[in-house]
Length: 348
Image (tube, rainbow, N blue to C red; front, side):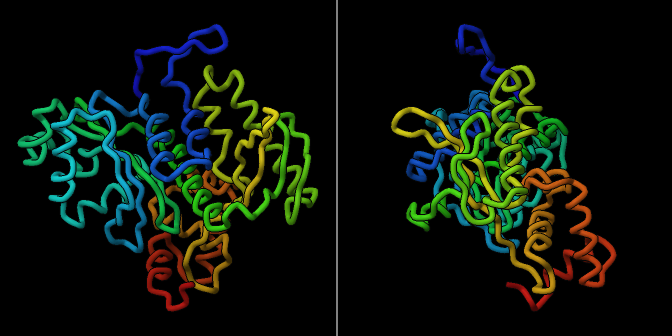
């Protein structure tokens, strides 16, 4: 993550805002706002980690199949006006195949990396004749999506040509997992018009105040309570002293089913509520819903450890589900599995 020069006073001590990765999650799970307000609020949270003095392009999209995404909304934030004027023309000039690459190679990839170039990236016409006059020699793409194809993303300029590092990919992969989960949850709550009650309500000490449905079962209660306590620990000293560890312990889902979000009552008390937010994924009817979910993330190019984080399940469980799906479909390799799933008539 990038260094950030400005500092905040928090609880009488100083902190570098670049370390506050959890602020991105908290902004993402703020449900009480319009889609436009939500996107800008999340952009403000990611800005300290992305903005290299060029501002950000923030966008919400839906992508069906393997084609280019349909942009539902976009915002050019904190950009110099001349640069903001260039952005729409630059993206309009990209071929459909090129527009797909950030999504196929995401969730975190640089422009030069996307083109499989190093120094020669500077000689591309759109860079040499367009963006370099603003001091922009590369860029970074963040694309957050799930198997439904709905998600959000960010594009930010960089002053030097550089491929993303493994640590960047891991951190942004985890942040993108939460962003995609939050987008899915927002639409789920919107479609329910607020009628669906939380599956469970905990206080910050892990005490259960209410539960319904599957969340009432003892194993589910224990799993949710453990997740609540991990989140609260991450929000303590870990938040600033071990930010990547804090992010790693706050998985994007609990047991592949629930998102945990804050709910503040009128009296100021904060509760952590569990809401059902299981991702849906198409696939052959011979596969279980969880197997289709895992394959859906594999189709996005996500590796097994990231899929485990996205679903809130064990890494070993992802491997078992992949093996089981291969056996059911009579294939041996990951590539054969994806090809068979894509060609299967039993999609649903």
